[in-house]
Amino acid sequence: MKTALVILAAGKGTRMNSDLPKVLHPLAGAPLLIHAMRAGETLTPEHTVIVAGHGAQAVRGAALDYDGTATVVQQTEQLGTAHAAAQARAALARFDGTAIVLFGDTPFVSPDTLAAMTDAQADHDVVVLGFQAANPGRYGRLVMEGDSLQRIVEFKDATEDERAIALCNSGVMACRAGLLFDLIDAVSNENAAGEYYLTEIIGLARDRGLSATVVTCDEAETLGINTRAELAEAEMSFQNRARAHAAEEGVTMPAPQTVHFAFDTVIGRDTVIEPNVVFGPGVTVESGATIRAFSHLEGCHVARGAVVGPYARLRPGAELSEDTRIGNFVEVKNARIGEGSKVNHLSYIGDATIGQHSNIGAGTVTCNYDGVMKHHTEIGDNVFIGSDTMLVAPVSIGDGAMTGSGSVITSDVEAGALAIARAPQVEKPGMAAKLIQILKAKKAKLQRGS
Ligand code: UD1
Ligand code: CA
Image 1 (cartoon, rainbow, N blue to C red):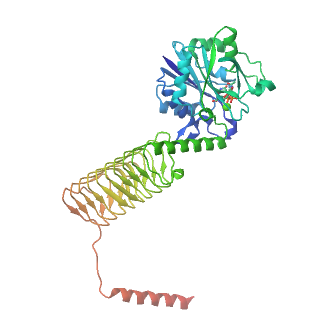
Image 2: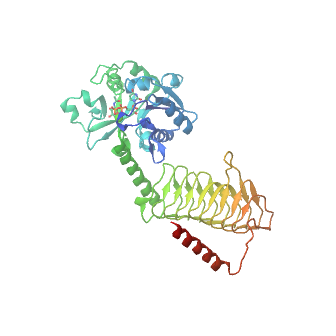
Image 3: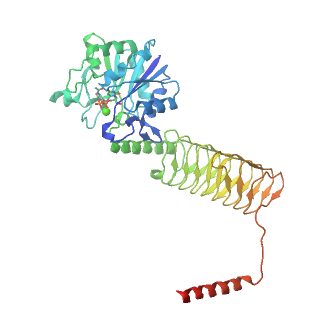
């Protein structure tokens, strides 16, 4: 079945008390909006239309950044959810499949639930995603007659009896696109809020003898974010699910509550993640790796058998091959570390390629930035870089070469060579004691003078 997504994301999110549009607040390393887009993506929609309003420029940027084929339309005045959905009409003018309306501030709707909705849409004109609310609060209430949905009544407009209904509207709807826009045309704003409610289309559809039904899901999926407190709660529930999922997938975590995942983290089986590890977006870790305590990883790939940390930082573009070692206080950015190579202590490796079985000594720095441009460092196989070597890029070190500790390497080193670039050592016998005498005499003179 052909589907199109319409994601409503124009609201201000006043209760976030923020300069950032609500849908751009991050959850597990991605804006809320991206979570909604990812959920919808599982239906392989023909069109994705984002309705932006508050902070439209920024919302457009984030949406297109994630999916360059999305269409972002603007709702200049926020007159209600029906008015928002209506803004997608032109973008879907030639589309004749099912439109799925999602909210940009509702990040957890599952692929299975969306699939159940499109299935139900085959037999009903309008399908609404509902849930049994533990505390129905201000949600819209679903008025049922058997399996048939009669109408949705907003809290503000509901009678006492209707407010007693616990079956609530999540906001997600499925309906043939043409019919959706027809029904929206008939929506009025004569209600307590003076808004054009999308929820009104159910009553309108029933009046025309069309059918409407409800698909239900767990309340956790329909969690909408309105405040920073709710955002923090959503983050917590995301993290708990991600931890449980990782454990099921065969990942060992002695202190799972201290491990933070991103929306897209992928961890292989029999990998160990020690306490207090943080994953930013874009990380994949293969099987049998070890990520030791207090490490921070983002935009990187860790191959089988690698050991990272404790206290390591892998930044975007770090590519660790099998059985590599990245030790404490080592930062790696945009660099490929070849199989079996080690960078064990206090180093910065940025914009570099390191071959296989090379050893990078403590305190090595690839000096990649000249203040204006970034330059590349190339290190071959079986290289030994002495401690405290400064590799001033662009520079390359041939296979099997060595550098002396404390060297500042400014030109290429050929394969097999030893390069030493430091001031030669000078030794003055007996001078240490004499120097102390001289310094003590100076201090005494200064103290007499004051
Ligand atoms: C809506 C539903 C309610 C449901 C609840 C679930 C309506 C009338 N009510 O209420 O039945 O229980 O969600 O959370 O639909 N938006 C726009 N433009 C607008 C208005 C809203 O883009 O003019 C967007 C918002 O950014 C948000 C979504 O639509 O992403 C929902 O709007 P919101 O005002 O939060 O609706 P609720 O009052 O929560
Ligand atoms: Ca809301």
